Image 1: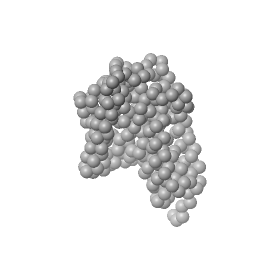
Image 2: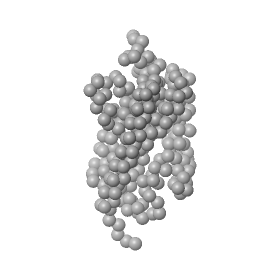
Image 3: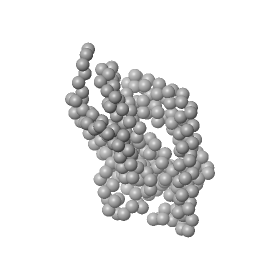
Length: 262
């Protein structure tokens, strides 16, 4: 365990060293926040609510969902490229588990990004963009629990897709399709309650809503009480299922790897 903690620490140092990348990414996120804010301000210009959601509730949902979506993927891209360039064979001979190392490094990335990027931008959103806090401290605590579950679900799904690089040639297309599907079905773009009922029903049987929609819906009060706890329970089920699928698919993939030499 100590070596994986060290991987996370080193990755935090590496992430913090690239100031140009950090400021470029921060500016990009800030620009997205401004576009989202003024878009929904225009949508609400002649109405007070949409599907029972006020402007403050909608902008809070969209901004929180945007931040959370940034944390539910990323680790899979590194694994996929390691597989495609052949370095996976070298990694498998080293004294650590490749998947665990990548997850540890991803945690380091996410921690430093939260401190240097998401937290300051989140404070700006609360001060200048009408983003509100959860109505109760219980909702806030449940949101944090649900958000962590959503991040784990996104991480496991990201790794599952990355392992398919053992069988596919068009890696770029697979990554683009994955990002599009997650963004659409997770409720990261708009709340799922704005979609037709048949779409909402389908989404209940997919893991994507557990990544973003469930935690943000708890934060904004769309899900409360028993519904909120049942939703967190469904997240736990998805986390277990995806983790089990990840282990099975990785075991199958390892049978495809042939390492020559000593």
